[in-house]
Length: 224
Length: 123
Image (cartoon, rainbow over all chains, first blue to last red; front, side, top):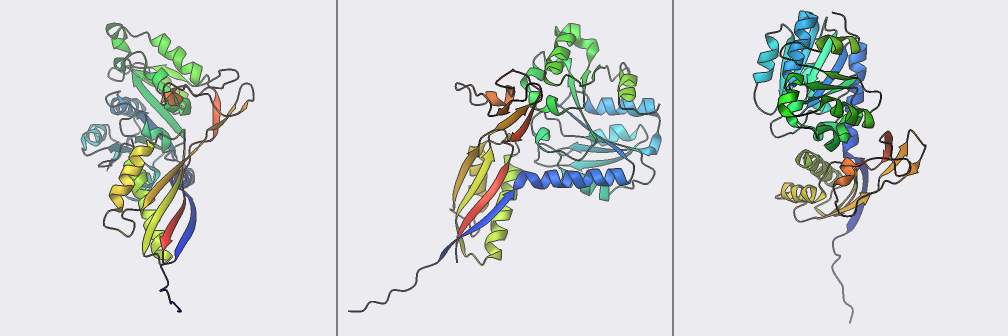
């Protein structure tokens, strides 16, 4: 007996070889080219929740007095609190709300730039979402990455997160006035940082009263 | 911590590729994730399954291969793998130093990838 079998479904392999993280890295490179074309120095500010990223940006803006020549992209999950605090200092501000995301990515920065008037802007601060883990994996295209850590986060922050501190172009130790009360040795934190990243400028600040802010400005080569 | 966004991106790529190739159903997805990424593989698989629901890829098998880390040391010139503490699977995130000279000044050559390698579809 001849049996005719119905032809079963055909199964195919589709080779994709797509690096999902590479997409962000490539977009970051494009952002950097765009900053360079417009002669904008872009600085990504990362750090834990409450480390003082917004206060630091405010203090730098106050000292620089560059008004609308400075733009700030403020990243946060849902609120506009940071953007409002920065706007008082006279800079152009755009708020990027990530919703569920724990970090900014290069695509969000691209969109923010599209929605911003950048003519005359010389300096751009990008305030990342408060987090020491995820932003390390998502470069944005900034020329420099600053990590802000505060003494109130305890003595082990740098040892615990070498990943992000190794990538940093500058480490800022904030709330230095509280070191004694927190029983944290700022010099130990500095040694921890230099062990991972020996050349990194390590600057101690109190963003609320302006201590150390000039050192940041000088180290970044910004004019006051 | 960013497993959701990465998984969404993977799912989008899988469904796009299936549609482009006239795939009716996606049977399996093969990923390669570097051991130095900050991705929790279990969570990635969980989110992919969740995001596949109601699509042509619902119920597809998700296979993940780990890509071993390779570094080079800027101090002593060592090239190769890194040392892991067997007792603590997360310690490699803290202890990325050179296994030969213990310097922390290393550059990662491999292990930070998240590659969608291939999918299997029924046409």
